[in-house]
Image (cartoon, rainbow, N blue to C red):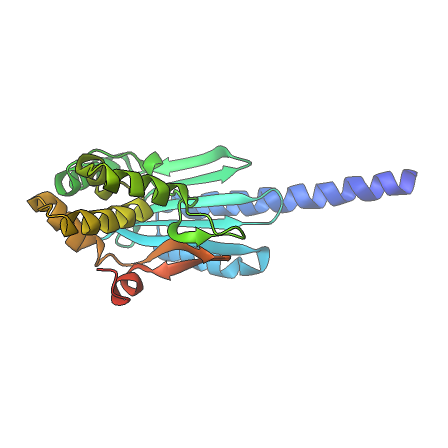
Length: 232
């Protein structure tokens, strides 16, 4: 019994030591605000079960990225970059934020740029929503995602105001649902406003990926591929 207790204690010590080392190393990397350095660290950490979740354009040279480490205790790494510079980052473990770093001036400039283009205000917390999926008939029972169900209601109600908010959303998948919704409204004679058209044209050309689902397949797909398939 004593041997088992010692072995268990040693195991927990090793796990906690690894977790602390990984987290501390990552914090040091993120504090340098260097995108290339962060990507190299993630690449070298693949053997520690680190994988990319999101990597997509927000606006101009602004991108959102997120990675997860499935090693105990598990981490979510979130980054907003402008070119080769990280302007905001956070590290989450067990749903608690354990680290956050930002270039305040650069983030304010980002907010200003987003507001000027999208016509709405955002915060860094509005990004990194990796639970929203664009698709239909998902999972074993083939159920539509909640956002698709809501989109159908908005179309039926001809609620272009709410769909416009989705176009302005920080969540790419909601933007894609909005595009689909407006496509249906246009079939009924709706005429897009200049802002709606501008946003739709931009979103269709965004670089990076979106989270999709089709049946039991859940994956990450290039935004450009979606519109190559004729959904535009």
